[in-house]
Image (cartoon, rainbow, N blue to C red):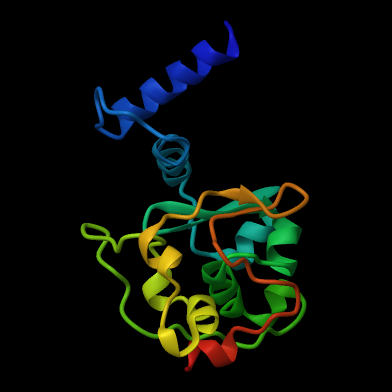
Length: 176
């Protein structure tokens, strides 16, 4: 079977699984519709990041139903690129990651999945967007355009207009 046909078959199955019969299904919807129920059926606690690192080769991080970062387990834990991932990992106890991170406590409320914000779904709580925007608030592209899941180096993908750089601290921005 040619790859195109297989891809169409997978997307069709994902659409049926997600209850989207006849509607276009993008790559993120396909992954979410096929992977999440499978892992849930296996009894995985997808929020236990201390365990996930040790049982996974690659990890996908989701926020409000969108994949925001995908990377090899060690790369993701050592060098997170999406601000949400950085905040999540800052909450993992020291024993699970080998070294303590400065805790990033996000401000604001989690948006409703039924009525998500336009643009990047994380922008209302994003410390990096506030750093970039300064006194002007969150940059317009964060508020109006969903960033694509793009390679930021070495097969590490992030859906962020302003990925976190190695050694960058978001702690101060989270409390601004």
